[in-house]
Structures are given as structure tokens and as C-alpha cells.
Amino acid sequence: MSDSTILEVKDLQHIYMEKTPLEHQALSGVSLSVEEGESIAIIGNTGSGKSTLIQHFNGLMRPQRGEVTVEGQYLSDPKLDVKALRRKVGLVFQNPEDQIFEKLIGDDIAYGPLKMGLPLKEVRDRVKWAMELVGLSFEELKDRVTYALSGGQKRKVALAGVLALKPKILVLDEPTAGLDPRSRQELLDQIVRLNEKENMTVIFVSHNMEEVAYLAKRIYVLADGRNLIDGTPGDIFGNSEVLSKHHIGAPQTVEILAQLKARGYPVNLKAYEIETAAKEMVSVLQSFRR
Amino acid sequence: MREIASFEFELTRNITIGQYLPTGSLIHRMDPRIKLLAFTILVIAMAICDTYVGNIIALAFACYLFYMSRIPISYGLSGVKPAVPFILILAVLQLLFYSEIASGGTVFVDYGFILITSDSVRLVIVSALRFIEIIFLSSVLTLSTSTTQITHGIESLLRPLKHVKFPVHEFALIITIAIRFVPTFAMEMEKMMKAQASRGAEFGTGAWWRIIQRTKDVFPIIIPLFNVAMARAEDLVLAMESRCYTPGSERSIYTKYKAQNMDYMALLFCVLFTVLLLAFPFPY
Ligand SMILES: Nc1ncnc2c1ncn2[C@@H]1O[C@H](COP(=O)(O)OP(=O)(O)O)[C@@H](O)[C@H]1O
Ligand SMILES: [Mg+2]
Image (cartoon, rainbow over all chains, first blue to last red; front, side, top):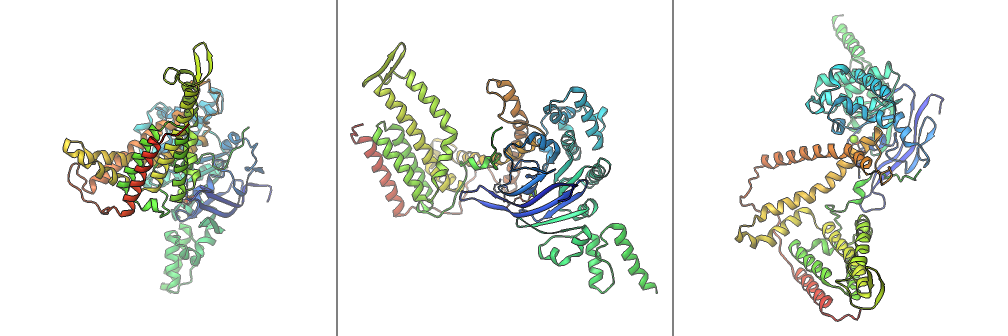
């Protein structure tokens, strides 16, 4: 464990409804380690334990077996200050717009900071800061009613509600699921900005491989409650055997490159980014000219 | 600070209503109509029986039903747990204020308006036992019968009421939906509690006398839950309409139930048990 490790999971197991006839092992030995400022994607099929895993990061679930540490703090410690932990690790659930309950947008985003007992001035500043980070105009929208928003805007409000806690680690469960392409792209760009400009550590769960390729610096692949492989997007997407064996898709760029390779063209499968993949394709096309 | 179990938010764990636990036991395989009938008879017997011995026998029988249906008795106990405060409050009220109804027997305490007699003590203990027996019995029924079976059972038992224009089918449908949605809402509520806790909400931690504060604490869960309930109800309506559900039209069912000899024997046994429980002159 290096100095800059901010979150570490060691051999984590979780059994739902333990000691009942319905017990179900959702995690059976997951390990991962995240450095400060990284952007990590967790991928895997439905039911592979992704949501269960990330609920351990802010103490919603405590390790049954194994260990989770955040900045060196053991989450299995019964004396742990859970409130402080939840400020440090901001968790955004799937479909977070469901959790909006105040009438006015500003009030809803202010809920977390108010619960922290911050002075009103500070609360206001944080709401403004959070709204602007997600691309919502503070002056224009803070006194608007929440139920009149579009789906994409609601999701941004919910995200701002967590950002207002100023977390060091932002954890997102399928953040763009069910959004229209434009809202999706806006949200992705905001997450990139949070990671790069605000230096937040970002951990997100996603089924969309384009998104993973766009956002993640490193990927963990989960299957049946275990981590299968991890590595850079280049490593993972270049490993077509594991991907196809576990029915995990790849970005379209990788699929095209893999098709080219299968037809005997010398392309680099690790060039998953749009620009690099385009270069590979151009070089194939140029080989025809000669 | 209190010790937090790893299932702090596992609400679904404690909700046994609407959960079906298929173990394939004899009780699971009973004809749902007969099962409901037997259940009703037993509940009536337990509600009327007012002797110590009779209630202990009834409790033992309820426990035996868990064994027979191969359902762990912990399920029954977790159903009793949330009812304990009610049982206790009821017991205290009965002990203090029911002396007019149960004034017979030996007088233990006679102090001002408080009159505690052996009859009122019995009333208290028997009521508590009844509570537990009926919770156990309902747990066995719901855990061993799928909601579809319960609906069809209720529907065919109530069918005679159709002649007096009672909306039997609609009634059965409402019951199914209500039962079916209990675990769904428990899950939604669990998710909502977790989501709000992630932004700093706390539930049930303030001092109990700060009732307004504690009530306000639940708004962040109750309000979204209402929204979710509305959305779910709408989805359900759409799903039913898209499958051409028409209220009032005659519907056939996929599984035809046919009572076996076993079922009639079970029913007969329950009737005999009830007669014994109510008619036998137990000394206590
Ligand atoms: N509250 C729960 N009670 C029982 N089982 C659950 C619960 N939540 C999830 N599971 C089960 O645990 C497994 C992992 O679920 P989850 O972590 O939600 O997976 P993912 O997010 O990767 O789809 C699934 O098989 C799921 O059915
Ligand atoms: Mg999930």
C-alpha cells in the first residue's frame, strides 16, 4: 500500500440475508486499491456485485469478512465516525433523481450541508459551487421547483446534492443509465472535470463501454462476486478472450479493430481511444494505396 | 457510539409478509383454498380460547407448523419482534384498566383505581400468547403460499358472495397487489434510506422527546417513497392494460386446484383441534 492509496479493499465478502434460507453470497473475495486522484471504472454483468461493493465504500455496509480502508481508516472499526466518512466518500446511487424530496432545487442540494451543521453562508456557497460544477445556473435555478425539471437536469441536481458535501472520493452507480445522449455527454464531461480540475477521486460503475473508455484510467472487472482482471482500458479491451468469455462488451472502436485484426490487418488492439483507433484505421487504409 | 451490524439497512431481512419460501413441504403443497379455510378456523379458535393450557397447546401447535413446513422458526420470531412494544403496552393497559371486565378470581392488588385480580392477569398473559400465536400462524401461511395461490384461494372461497353483488375478483386483486407490494416498498425504502444517509441523513438517532425533529427526519424517505409508489402504480396499470386486463370480465386460471384427501384430513384435524381447544374444560 503506497502513501497515495486512498481506498483499499482486501478480500471482501458479503452475504445477503446471512443465516436465513434466502442467503445469497454477493461478494466472495474482492480486492482493489485506488490511488488518490484516479478515475476507476468497475464493470461486470448484472448481479456480479458491483452495487454491493460500492456500498461498502461509505459505510452503508460494513465488511462481514475482509477489510475496507479509506485513507488508512478501517471501516470495520465499530467506533468509526460514519458521518465523517460519508462526507469524505460521496456516493451517488443509481437513478439518484428518486431521492430528491424538497420542493426547491436549492433546498434539496442544501440538505447535506445543512445536516453537517454548517453556517448558512457556507451552505449557500456550497450549493452555488455544486450547482455550477454540474452546469446548473445558481441564480436561475435555485428557486425553481424540482418536479418541473427534465430527467437529465434532475440527475444533475441529485449529483450536486452529493457534491455539496465536498467529498474527496466520488462514487457513482451507473451515473448515465437512462439519460438521453446529450445529457449523458454533459454529465460525463462534468465528471471528467471533477476528476481533473477538482482532483476528486472518481469510482464509477458502468455498462457502457464507450463511457468507460472515455472516463476511466483503470478498470476492474467483476464476475460472480470476484474480481476477474484489472488494468488500463488498453489492457482490458485488448484482452478479447476474457471479454468474450464473460460476455462483456467492448467499445465500438475496439470491436472494429478486432474485426480488422481478425481479417489479418496489423492493428494495435490497445488503441481504444477514438483518436488512436482512427489512426490505426487510417494506416490500414493507407496500406491499400501502396 | 453504538455498534452497527453489517446489515444496518437490510430492511427486507425483517419483513416476512409477502415473502414466499418454497421448501416443498406438505403444507406448501396443500390446496390454497383449504389452507385458507383451515387458517381462518384456527385464528378464530385462538382468538376465542381463553385458558392458559389451551393457549399453550395452541402455541405449541403453531410452532409445530413451522417444523412441518420446514420454515425456520426465526422467521416467526422476527415477525413477533416489531410487535413486542404493542404487546407490552397492551398488557400494561389491560392490567391497569380491565379490572371491570375481569374482576373475578383472587384479588392481588387493590389500590385506588388499580385492581389486579387473577382474572386480569390471565387476560394479560392470554392476550400476549394469542398475539404470538396469530403472528406465527400468519407467517406460516404467507411463507408457504405464493401470492397467486392466496389470491385464487380467496377468490374461490368468496365466490358465493358474487350472488349478493360483492366484487369478489376485484377484492382478491386488491389483496394480491397489497401483499405483493410490501417487499417491493421495503426494498425501495431501503434504497432511499441508504441514498439519504449518503448525504448525511440520520434516522432514529435523536432523543425520543424531540418528536418534531424525528418526524422531520423521515421526510426525506417518505416523500420520495410516495413518488415511487405513484410511479409503480402507474407502471402496474400500464402493464395490466397492455395485457388486455378488463375489470369485470370472466377470467380463467392457469392452475386448477383440486383438493386431495390429505387436504380434507387436514381441515378435519383443524376443526377437531378447534373443538377441543374451545370445549375441553381445561383446569387453568
Ligand atoms: N438487498 C438484497 N438482498 C438479497 N440479495 C441481494 C440484495 N441486493 C442484491 N442482492 C443480490 O446480490 C447480487 C449482487 O447484486 P448487486 O450488487 O446489486 O449487483 P450489480 O450491481 O453488479 O448488478 C445479486 O445476485 C442480487 O440479486
Ligand atoms: Mg447495480
